[in-house]
Amino acid sequence: MQKIMAVLSGIIFGLGLSISQMIDRQRVLGFLDAAGAWDPTLMFVLGGAVGITVITFRFILPRAKPLFAPKFYLPTKFNIDRDLILGSALFGVGWGISGYCPGPAIASLALGSTNA
Image (cartoon, rainbow, N blue to C red):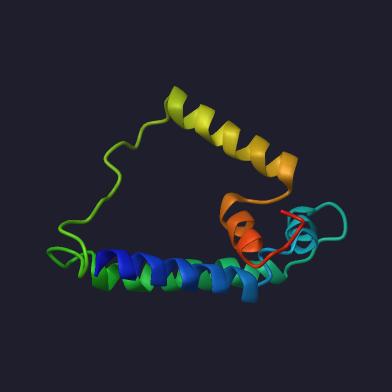
């Protein structure tokens, strides 16, 4: 059941990225271009995601465990260290080279886009 829920979650995530146009490279670059032709439409996507997360976490975290896992897997480290900085840099370089964040890149490839 856990694997089925993981696949369903991935499908919903991919559909959300597609519907919100997060897989459109030009829309994302327009959102990030605050000094030029800024396109604020993805701010609504971000705001909606943050709002839903804040609300649902208030209901989910008080539970003893998740529905389909033996326990919650929450971060245990909160310090900024070398691994965090290197990982962040690698993430940013990959995004800069490809023009895609990893999530939208996978969704774009799954939809058959040749731009990813």
